[in-house]
Length: 159
Ligand code: ZN
Image (cartoon, rainbow, N blue to C red):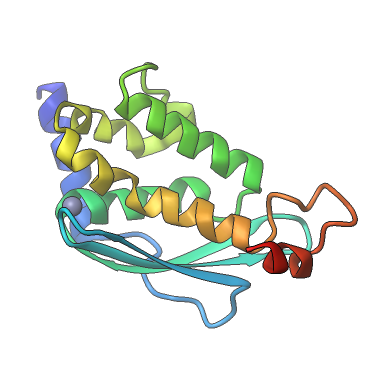
């Protein structure tokens, strides 16, 4: 099987059987992101654990790439700390800009999205869930958790 076909299989499988879809009742922050050029939408919630790990839940609709990407995002980022999640988001962005080779250790099935880089209009589809996660994680105060004195409340005042 060609690599490209194998990647399509992976994307289709996540699209048909999304991992982690469904919103959690408990959360510290919620965001709603839309990709107007394609019509993709995601609502994503992040909850911060005592250990600094962030649990993710989401509900989404849209094209196969956006849906598969959300499922892959859940696999790679759920129950990890902010640093790990942010590194995965940064790597995905770089991969879609073709400035790095896809690293399966960082992206897991996300390497199957590498082909999307050929279609600039679809890059936003692939990034939607990951950008939503980053936004929600920052709003939940995850970015500043290592800096005592910056509480979630003060972050809210700034925004
Ligand atoms: Zn889309």
